[in-house]
Amino acid sequence: MGTATAGKSSGGRTAWHNWAGNITATPARVVTPASVGELQETVRRAAEDGLRVKAVGTGHSFTAAAATDGVLVRPQALAGIRSIDRAAGTVTVAAGTVLKDLNRALAAEGLSLTNMGDIMEQTVSGATSTGTHGTGRDSASISAQIRGLELVTADGRLLTCSEKENPEVFAAARLGIGALGIVTAITFAVEPIFFLTAREEPMGFDRVTAEFEEHFAENEHFEFYWFPHTGNCNTKRNNRSQGPAAPPGPVSAWIEDELLSNGLFQAVNSLGRAVPASIPSIARVASRALSARTYTDIPYKVFTSPRRVRFVEMEYALPRERVPLALRELRAMVDRSGLRISFPVEVRTAPADDITLSTASGRDTAYIAVHMYRGTPYQGYFTAAERIFTAHGGRPHWGKVHTRDAQYFSEVYPRFGEFTALRDRLDPDRVFGNDYLRRVLGD
Image 1 (cartoon, one colour):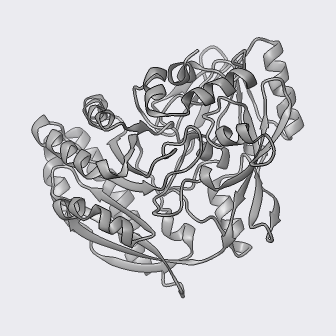
Image 2 (cartoon, one colour):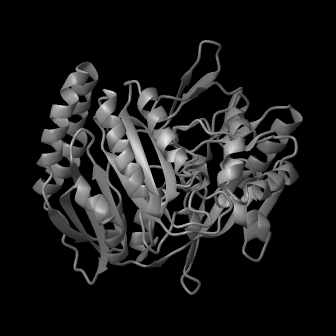
C-alpha cells in the first residue's frame, strides 16, 4: 500500500500529497525531527516566524487535516516501542511508529491490541488523531485504547496526559485532529496475544439488514460489504477462539486477498472508469465470485488486509439502530440515480466511548463507508449519500471526505464546545491551525 509522497514544486518548495492524491499542499519547509527536543524547537521557531505547523503521518486521510503552507513535520524518525509494562498491560510507542511495525513488534512480545482497523499503514498518531477504527461489539476504536499520551503544545512545552494527569486534555487529545498540539508518544492498553477465527460468508442484502442487530449481538466483531447494483453482501464475523492458527492456504489467500481484492479489483475498476455502463454487470459477477471461508490467526492477521487499489472515501457514524434504514435509503438512491458504483459499501460498528470528538462519543454506533475509485467523479454519489447520513444525525469520519462545518458539529457533538474551549486555551494563536480545522472547528 502506498504512502503520502513529496516532490519538488516549481517554486523550489516541496509539494506534498496524500495517498489518494486528492489533497496537495506546498509547505514553506519540511522538518523531520530526530528527537522530541528537536520537535519542540521546531514548534517554537515556527511560532516566532509566524508560520503554522502540521504533523503528517503516511497521508491516509482523505481530508486536508494535515495540509499546511507553513511547516510540515514528518515524525517518521520518532518511531519504535519505548517501553512495555506487562503488569499494567500497556505499551508506550513513539508517535511516528507505523501500525504494521507496532503489530509485528507486539506479536513478537506475545502481546496485541484488542481491536484495530482494516489497514495498518498509518502512523499511530495519525490513526488515532483522526479516529481510525475497526468493528467491535465491546471493543472500540484505536483512540479508545489509549491510556496516556505526550503532546507538544503551541508554546513548545511537552504535556503528559492521562486520566490522572491533565485529564481534560486527555479526554480530547486522544482524538484531536491535530488541533491541540503534536502528539509525540502514545501509551496503549494491550493484552496477551490471542486467536481470532474469521468466518466470511455471502449473504443477501435484505437478510443482512433485517438481521443486523442479531449479527451484531452474536459476534465480537461483525462487518459486511454491500455491492451496489446488486442484492449481494459479503459478511465477516471475527470471534476469539482457542486456536491453533489455521490461516488461509497460500492459494486461497492469494485468490481472495491479492487477485480478487487487489489485482482483479484494480482491473475491474479501471474498466469501470473507462466504461461506466459496464459496472452493474461487473458488480453482479464480482459479488458472486466470493465464497465462504473460515480461518484462524493472531489478531492483526485477521483484522487487517492489504489495500493497493486507490480510492476516495466518505464514512459516517450513525446511531446503530438507524443503519439498516439508512442502508435501504442508500440502495434506493443508487438504484434510481443512474450512478455507477464499482466499490462495495462497508458497514462496521463501535460501542459508545467517552472521547470528546470521537464519532462514537456517547452513543452506540455503526459506520457506513462509501468509496469511489481514484480518478472517477465522486461528488454526485457522496453528496447524495451525505444527505441520507446527515438526516440520521450522522457524524463524518474526521479523516474522510465530507462537507460539514463547525455549526453542524456543534449540533451532533454534545461536547463540541468543550473541545473548542480547550483549543482556545492550548492554541490561542492557531499555531496548529489550517483551512480544514477552520471549517470543522470554527475560528
